[in-house]
Image (tube, rainbow, N blue to C red):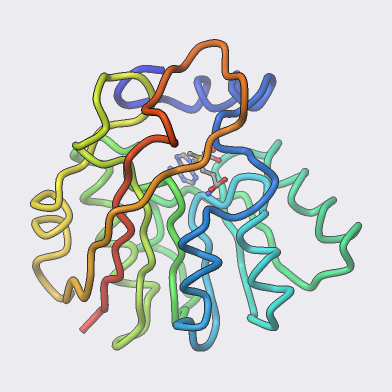
Length: 203
Ligand SMILES: C[S@@+](CC[C@H](N)C(=O)[O-])C[C@H]1O[C@@H](n2cnc3c(N)ncnc32)[C@H](O)[C@@H]1O
């Protein structure tokens, strides 16, 4: 995968084994789910496991992804699991034009896919859809993960810089992404790619 993947890269990854598609949420989203209060937007929800986990905990959840295939799979899982979640095909870099508002946003591996310019559009859109006082729970690759395979590495400074105006970075903890087993095209650190799990409040 290139540093900044395009739509067709994601389409071809979903046609095979997408490294992130592990059939359950990344652990910090399970561990920190009690911190969530109110409605939730899962931005870049993929095939919906985090959104559906939160729906199973009683949260009102909307998942968006810019590809039809993962959204189709997420809707099918929601039906199979009999869980009420809304899944929409929507570009997370265009949230500024959306009229919906949320108390929380979940980002499990989306922020780190963006170029600098898309990152800016994404954060502006988040500032629009997240209610004042609402929180963003964001997990991204860390600059402590060696190599260049997979998404962009993100430093703590980049997180502080991206969320400097109109936001408070409440915490940034180290974590690890779980990835699908036996990946052919990717090699990451033993124990999973090093990541940051950030909690960021909209002021
Ligand atoms: C690394 S995957 C993570 C998927 C899911 N959050 C998870 O944890 O399994 C990133 C997801 O973001 C989606 N994506 C990438 N760019 C996007 C954009 N501009 N708007 C919405 N979704 C996007 C991809 O299609 C992919 O499903």
